[in-house]
Image 1 (tube, rainbow, N blue to C red):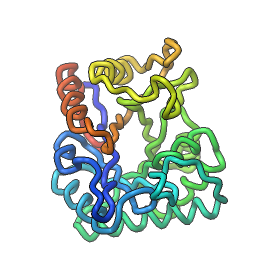
Image 2: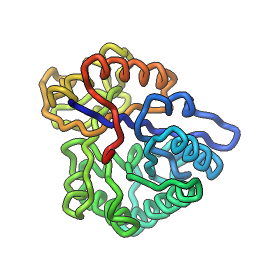
Image 3: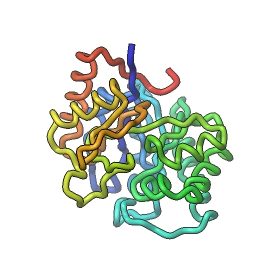
Image 4: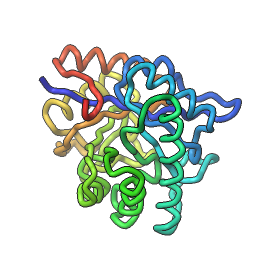
Length: 253
C-alpha cells in the first residue's frame, strides 16, 4: 500500500499575534514542523504546539530558520558556516527541550523558508545545517527538497534523508520550487493541488510550470500552516489520498 507522511509548518504565532489554525490542522497531519523562535514562534507557542502535537500522536520536528522575525525567514541572508551551525543548533536544542519536557522527543529537522531554499542549491550551507543536526542527534531524520543538495549532504553525513514535495507550490524544470512572486509559484486551487500530489505520490513525477514532467521522490508532503486555507487543504488532501489508497503516517512509523 503506498504511503506518505503529511507535514505542516506550524507554531508560527508570536506574542499577541496569531497565525494559522494549528489545533485543527493537527487532526489531519502526521508530522508538525514547529518554528523555533527565529523566523516565527516564541517559547509559549513552541510549548503549546509541541504539547498539542504529541497529544494527537503527531511527530514533532524542529523548523529552524534565519534570524528574521520581520521577514518571516523568507529573506535571503549571508551568514558564515559557524553562524548557520550555531543558529540551527540553538533552535533544535530549544524545541527538543520542550518535546522532552512534554514527555516526547524530537523526530526530525526541516529548515525553513530562505534557509531551506538556499541550502537546496548551496552544498556548503547545507553542510553547516546538517553538521548541527548530526552533532545534536544523528538519529534525527532530515527533511529536504526532493533531489536537492540538502539531501545529498544529509545522506553523506549518515542521516535519514527524507525527500519532501509540496502540495501548494509550483515547480521549475530542475525540480526546484518556483520563487514566490513568480506566476504559478503558489497553487491556490485545491483540485490542482490534489492532482499534483497524486502524480508525485503515485507516479513519482510533477509537472513543472513549463509543462515538462520532472521526476521526484515523495517521502513527505508539505502544506503551509500560515495559509488561510491550510485546514481546508489538509482535509481535501487526506480525503483524496484515502480514495487513492494511500496511507498517511509519519516517517519511521
